[in-house]
Length: 95
Image (cartoon, rainbow, N blue to C red; front, side, top):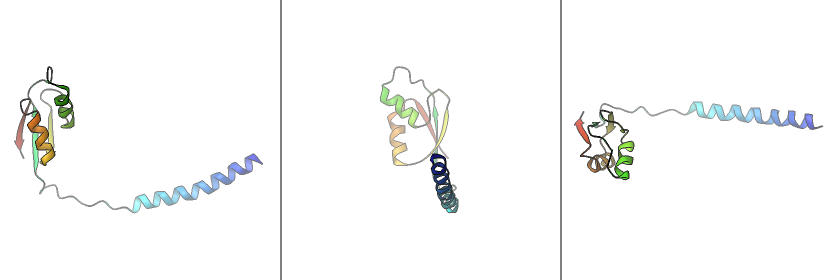
């Protein structure tokens, strides 16, 4: 009898998984117009050795952690605040 219960469970689970797959495939992504977004290019020019830990974590948040790493980010207020915090370690260029 235990084998019969396992088979029934498998039969019940399989149709549900098919339904969930069909739901995820019907979701459409919005097309983003990247040409209108403002971007900045951030380059790390100095080492993070000897700086406080919060500044090191800010560099990681900016996708930087080694000298000469480059990150292209959206120009938002939060990114600008992070850049201001570690401005002595990075160079910024507008794109």
